[in-house]
Image: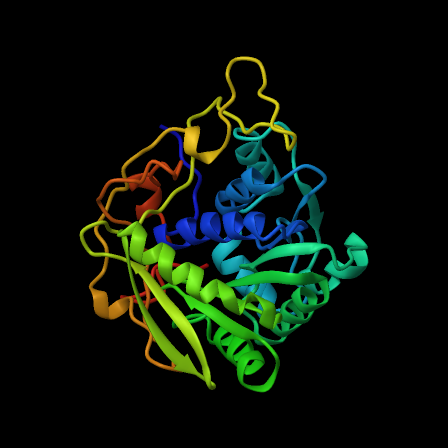
Length: 328
């Protein structure tokens, strides 16, 4: 079974799906944006969320050099083999057409893409450089419409202090409201009308039974912490089998029996074991300084079409610290 390289863990797969469902139930429509695509693992999932008249926009440098010396060094060290061709081939395994691809620095996204305030969900998994993350935050705030949600990756990893500083600075000194934390991502909003999602997510997590959830208070606001229970483990990949593709936004199936979405694609089993729980907890108002690539044994739920990242792919993850193997 083929797989798409990358890092996309079970809690976040489930939350992406649930937040998309809640937006649909709340009649929140709009476009989707991902900054930082790598090989396309999370973009493939977002492609299934695109409804009629909505578009998915993906922004990445791919082969383009970074803007700053720090950005170029980061790109050369971690992503020297990343190409747009690899991303496009992976994406087209599951979808009939490519998303709108903007091959440019995220700091030029607004100008190059001529985008406007039409987005309901933005996933930021781009540069880890503080100044660029600050600009990405400004971009998201500019583009998100009412009731919009933003997800930031790498908000607590030891090798991404720039992300942590920029995100929490916007929480403590800006208007960003954190809604939910997972070991890898923070989900937030600038719209107080989204605070009802806390209750809905808590009810969902408790009923679902696969995740453990608790509530914390940061900067005077409650937020949720969600992680997969030890007996279930953390999922890693999201890859229906080669040849299966998503339906078009209107929901019309194609020839050969195209699945109706993620739930109809092939299920799989991840490879390795999850880290101890102490590496997956987030103290109140603080960031854990350790993290590592995580996959785990355990069944996938029927509602998720996620196939394992191969053991070969997992072994190829670069290492910069004995406790940190995940560069994105």
